[in-house]
Image (tube, rainbow over all chains, first blue to last red):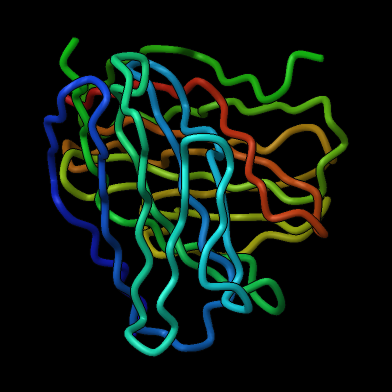
Length: 113
Length: 112
């Protein structure tokens, strides 16, 4: 009930291509779904987040698609750049009650120049 | 604004030794958390605090202690280090009405 399953584990994309990372959750009480970006040797940093009252959120080249009925959400990186090469984590949590977030296992993205 | 700071950056311990990982933030955030990051396992919550004097357990609390005597500091104590605690440890903080967590740079711990 508490797991967040993330795929793929690693991804190689050509410069200018679209990177897609998928996550699935089990707990229907979750109502906050962020994506974090982590560069080697650094801590994760919030990239973009969505709440289940919308099906899509876009910020620049980054888009979250959310499917509430399927309990799935995904990150799309348009026009991928070598500077996007990093590890991406999805997470899920509740905006009320306990302050706990469940993270996915991470996707290592490499964008080839 | 230094944000979230962690010390030390690297540490090597022998089995059975104890130590404290330090975490401090200067953003006046009420919420602070400790995570460990292991290959293929993502970030797992160890302990968290919603304010000074209040702490609670996360997913993997065994072998770790925390306390929160001030808003700024949230140290993590390893009571008797074990090789299974070899990991990268991250501290994070946030405001209670914002769900964006700010992470520190991490402490890489090796237990021999």
